[in-house]
Image (cartoon, rainbow, N blue to C red; front, top):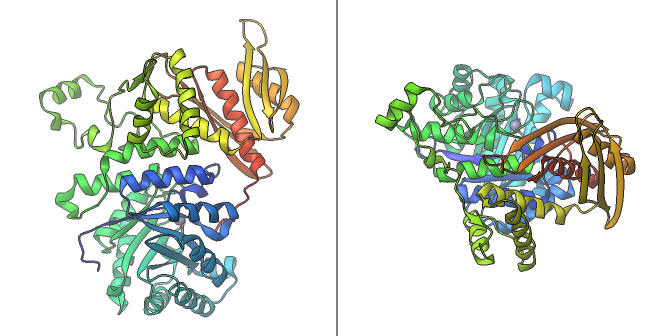
Length: 514
Ligand code: KIV
Ligand code: ZN
């Protein structure tokens, strides 16, 4: 199996990516991303961890009912209860995978699990045996695998393959791996385990030392892995996971070296990156490979001159091949409902009903009245806004007046609805955004701490909508709220209310690694 030249792309944005503090998503947001991942043609979508919360269970169930082409997967700890929950959530998927894991490093077994190696060995075997009752596609991960004892790994992995595990995923859980060592460990395991050819070998790397992509590729080239686990924009806990876009474009661009095929539709990479960033509120750094705003911008005169003479002097990939389109005006004030609906379809945005399309179209008209050229990014932002207002209706923005003058303390008056009932708050602050937050808090009194406030222009030019992200923390829970508007002060108010809604929704989740 490992000799195949197909590299399986396993996307875990909706599971490991979502574990990033503040990145938690609602069911509808997860569905939107899953649909886009299917358009991107990822082989496997890890949709969540079914036993972690009722919300995650429902999201996986919905995704299993919608996604047709990609395998849909749920994570589960190595116990019958988690596995049954995963199987139940995945029931409707035409192709489903159960991904079960248990820690195998001495440190994790002793300090976290408080289990002996023999107990872990037995539990891993039983878990895979149990999971095979529900599907013949079962993945097993030795958590903290890269810090585990090789002999013990060989013993566990041989046993789980015997029980029917079809994918073995060597987890570099804490990003401790170094390319040569990680690649060699994988190779050693494949060489020493007698039935290793009965499974596909997979890499799963974290980016704590900035080597997740390098480690994954070493696992592929040295170790013979044929599945890479990765996330869009490298989203994930701490420093994140292996970035999907970097793996895919490395393998495509350096096919001469890797000699592997990936089934990804690369033109969907940038739209997927934008969607994930918009939904989670995690902005992409401008110099990020492939999906950063500057990734294809040639500023120096020498480079520009070279590019004009022959593109490949300084360009190893073409921007359009990964889905960058020059800011294109797609719609305007005179565009009708049909043109709007068609553009939604082209962008892969599926709204559930005609009522939702009508509501989004009304927002579009409102925006087109204030802004002459509407870009794809504007449409994506307004749909996000519209969907947020449907999902979490506890606090809803209504209107705002704000006053700033040099030498005076800014003041704001905001009206918002609390479960449909309008309230008005007034406040002053050191700046206009501070004044708005104070005005909202006169009524809400959330006790939340603001951890991050960032403003991004959605498109170019002074007519651009501003997209604001606010990250709040309360009692150890971290959430991100996102809001967009032509007026960045209004966008800030919307972002703050959106974050409060997330705090209010109390979707407590169990972290699989705790
Ligand atoms: O990093 C990790 O160990 C994981 C496993 C659950 C695969 O995400
Ligand atoms: Zn992980």
